[in-house]
Image 1 (cartoon, rainbow, N blue to C red):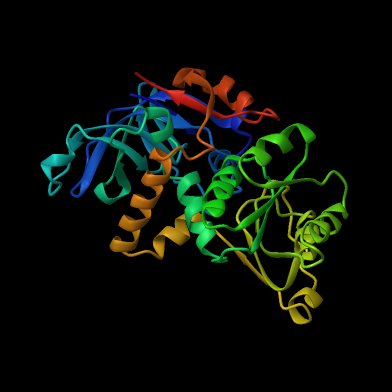
Image 2: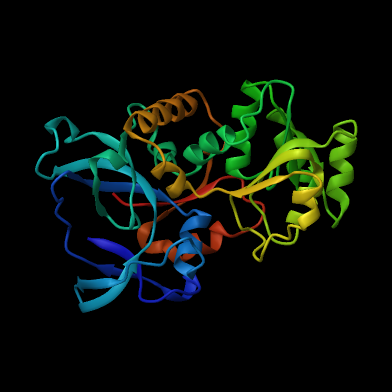
Length: 335
């Protein structure tokens, strides 16, 4: 089978390569999925660069060109279960599933049966994006647990996760302020029900949030940017409010002055999807999956696809995926 791997952490354009590997066999409790589509997510690229929450699992691989010590790229995808390990119910065989696993940028992947999700009638392109962004949005929204009439500030407001958050929060009658960098993106987030804030200069955001909230400030913020802009996010939240940082688009540390914590009582925390999922028991994971599938089948925004590339064209896909102003996800496909 074909697989995209890397021998060291670094620039994805430089370190990723396509190799041919034997097809894996599922262990007890595992299924094998013939992966048909997988997205190029920011987390995939952070992982390859070595800037993710864990390092690559470098191990000896038997390629068609000889032994190679490498790690595999990709965290999610969708396809069909084509083999079962001992102890897995036969009903899994032939099921169309989304899969959360290391190394989905390959034609076949094995994973514990608990980490595959039957997708039913969900189209393949949407199913391939099921286990990262929609799960992230659903769990993030539960963190501040805002009620009707409250105000939620979202950075990277035109991103897929932010658009999902607007959709879910609006259904709870939570008012969303979506920070965007370009006026062209403002109309798109406004159409979803958010108030767009074009914060194009340092220090502008707190003033804009105060104006939008009658001087109150946002009740909570979900921040995908972090870095130096995080200071403006902190100043945009009311005393006693909550800031959840779930991305690192800007890079660098988030400046958190002690007075924000001591005198204004802000609560600042991080969110990482693998850790959040690890806190859930089987019943809670099942309920989360049902919620997400209901959102996806109900027309959840943020699952649009802008371009599709064959796996062998992963280099072109990488260039496209980091292009500013994209209107959808970039997918890698195999037959």
